[in-house]
Amino acid sequence: MLNRLKKMMALVLLIAMLATLPGVAACGNGEETSGKKLIFGWDWDFTGRSALGVTQLYTGLVDYLRMTKETNPVPGTEVELKTYDTKSDAARVVVGYRWLKDRGMDLFSCSPTDFPMLRSQLEADNTPSFLGSTLLEILDSPLVVSVYGPPDSQLEVIMDWIMDNWDVSANGKCKIGFVGFAGLPFFESQRDTVMEIINENPDKLEITSVQMVPSTTTTWATEIGKLKDSDYIGVAMTGPPLTSFIMESRQRGYEKGIVGPLECMMAFWSLVKAAVPPAGLEGCVSGFYFPWYTDTGAFMTEVKAAMQEYRADEAAELLEGTGYLCGWAYGMILVDSLRRAADEVGGENVTGMDLFRAVQETDMAVEGFGGFDWKTTPTANALMRAVALYEYKANVEDWVMIEDFVIPPSLGG
Image (cartoon, rainbow, N blue to C red):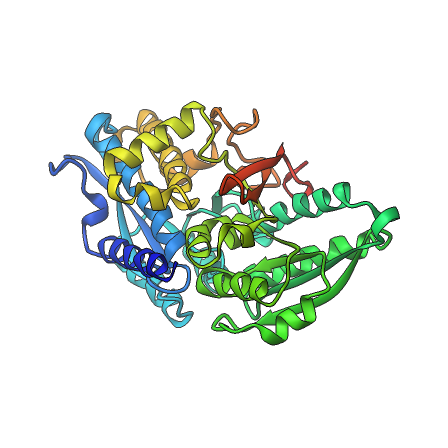
């Protein structure tokens, strides 16, 4: 198991190295495309604690752009990716934005964890952002669109599922614990969402303990001791800290449910699986805005075919995470938007704001998403708003859907 974990980390570092080499992201079939290039700047953590999820997300996007360039390019224009590695260092986030802006960036992306420290600058510069995930506080921003909704919305569905399936008359109120990164709005907002739901349902739920820790935490004896009486523990962490918490909680005898949104659970599952035996992962529940790889619809069929075409050596690892399929959807939306913008104003004339407005106007019906189209609303600038729940089953060593797609309250449900 240790060897598998080392292999996984080596793969992450290799992908990260390729992602941050100048020009790699723009490669297609080796031929230069004549026409205008729109620069999509990525100010993300490619080699720090979030590297696994980020590099897989980025890889899916790169491969979709590559497929487009090889098989059906947009006449007169294309998207070129430029990256800046924040290395889990908050001091590099603003530096990265300025570096990308100085290189002619037309459209911006960063982790929602980092967005709050950039928001005032982005608004002052009128810079449009196309994010992966998002935050509750920016769902109404006119300069932001995200591929899918915030983790808080997934937690709404998770908490409803817990209440619907918990027998209060037989077991008393369900005891909820929570552990997450301190000092970061993305994770503290998740804590606040869970606490609000608990406070609104005092007859069904009660809190055992809330443990907010530094993002560098690697040992968990104190926190687990305070959380051990919980029926469910919510996690708001990423990467190695998430992995070490789940591993140590099981080693210290906690056998009940561990729940979290995709950004803090499924996105880093290959790391977790490399460290924890399948039996120890039984009962983990994650929200997700996508179907899982077992789905047989057109979207997932295309994603798995692309893995074999472009990443055959990595496919087994990619199938354990969420990043690649999220990146593929990112690419679908980006290229569809670019094509519509080019049809309207001509490929040579498309600006970054033209592309962003086309992203805002996206309305895509995609098989496998519960019949919910990818589109924003006047109050939610996330394209994917419907959440499904998945539970890890040790007997099949895979995620199994336990709750079909539903739109949570914060996204208009």
